[in-house]
Length: 453
Image 1 (spheres, rainbow, N blue to C red):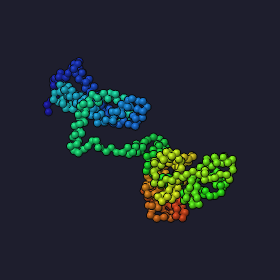
Image 2: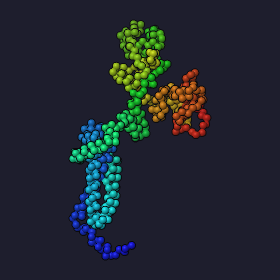
Image 3: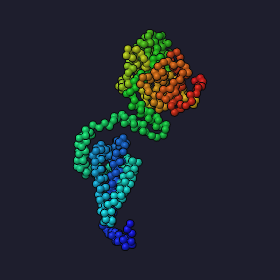
Image 4: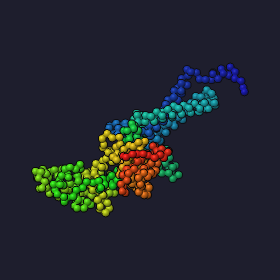
């Protein structure tokens, strides 16, 4: 190895440009400026691709002109990305070329190696990672700030970027890729994904997610799944003595009561308590003068297969709050109200209870005691479970469908990683079930003493 002498060091130092040489400092300043431009283009690209379009739309509607400019830029992403990449590559190549020239003037051919290593580190840290990290953390704020400048850049570079986009599209077409036909997924799927990504305080986010999911699910849920079954519907015989009928209506907790003619399946009208009060007022409370058939309103029958979204629109168009549900043979199945559909969106309106779903209460050791007629949809909504409900609507229906039998009391099952135990059964109806969610299932299959619920 050749020994380096003091003379060699002095000669190398003499080849360095003098610090007072203006050309040297101009070159360093230009390189620094180009690195800043590179960082600006990199951060702009990240912020404008990561910006929340929903927030920009909301801000634009509130009169924020910069938000409108951001949306205009992001609407043509290929043009935007083309201009930003063109500007970024232009300044990176120019900065590297200048750095190579400066270092070659100092170190000769070795300057190429030094320039490559030095510029790679500088570009990676200060022109790529640093600005892009900041842009990801402050995408909306940065996008609003840089949108006017980027709009000018896009306009200036538009001819070249359009040419680049044209070349890219034609090249991809040679390989059978059609840019215009790229499947980006449905809007509903995007909304569902955004709902699941919603974060915040546990209770608030849970309720908001449940409500938003329910709105999107309205078109997939049939009336049959939320209706009040006929066995639980309060109905009255129109032929009963008028005084007795009026007394039943006045003491009922419902304002609308279906009336039948001898046969409970033969619903001929719906009596509204307000109409009965008006009739009583006209007859000066003389019940014997009331003709109940003149007070009763026409019944509105709907098929059990109607989905909740269509039914909600029908309620609004007809200005109705109450409908009678029938099956394909015209048999009376139950009733559904506007309030039932609204509760599918906002949830049950209860008092201060730990468990919001009616028919559910928390048992010992993480168990839930659930009535058999509680719908799976309500359970999934309240506890964010993921039990299927395509072939049945209630928790009892799930057990019967999966077990392929009518279970006996104390019989236990495990479906979809949930533990189920039949607690109570009346004839052929499962009335009470103990359910343990997956997170609470114990490895040891101990006997569970629930006592009397």
